[in-house]
Amino acid sequence: MRAENYVVFHNDSDDSYMNSSRNFMGADVGTTFIDMYFKSAGASSENYDRIRLTVTATKEESALESVGSALAGAKAPVTVIADDINSNYIDDGITAVHSINLQVQGSYETVENIIASQTLYNYDSGKIFVVNPAALTTITLPTAAAGTAVGNGGPGWNCKIVFSENDGGVVDQKCNIATAAGEFFQGCLFSDDSNGTNSIANGTSNDHINLVNSAAQSDIWFNIVSDGTYMRVETQSMVDATDIAFADTALS
Image (cartoon, rainbow, N blue to C red; front, side, top):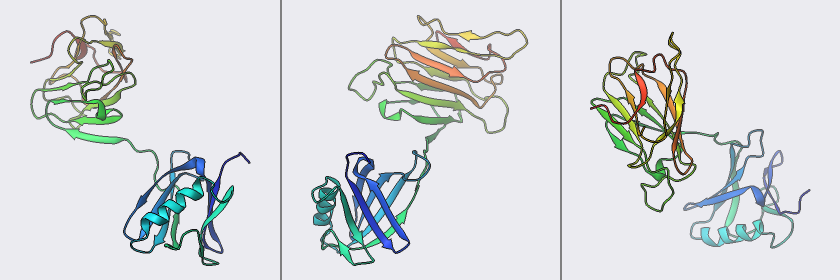
């Protein structure tokens, strides 16, 4: 056993839970409850466990402080926070273990649907953008370079963009993905057309990806990540690199 603190919850004689303070992720307090979150004790490390404690109204704050002390090992390396079997609780404000929920949620992506031109910001990192444009559309990325403004992405900023008509056909409108001013793309858009043509970014002038309307197939994914200087792009194989390609200017 590693040198760390462990906390225990007994909801019933056949329903108990133990985890370490190292896996504690935080707590949420309501009028009559405290929700404690831990990295999952189950099979998937991407999930989390939630333990809900029933708390007397107006005593939530003091109960939360007692829970914090237990996590810090104030009493012992192993601390029973709540025991419904013996009616034993670390704080007088706690009255019961309301529920023990294992692997509450897996790893989810944030998906945003947009239908018109949009500028992305640092807080959009990690999102999937599904774009079903109603007119000429340009998605403008934040800077690849680091900075404190919301328009600065910085190294590691990333997103996925797909232009989709939701019909398996081709895009109906002219579409573009643009870097921030003064920055450029790196990467290769692979094509599986008969002549084997690919579109390869030159890193010096290619600041757009063009999707030609009535030609570029929809539902092609663009995975984009900043390395601090360039926006690097990868995608699955396309039908024709003349219809989806790196460019120096936007389609208009």
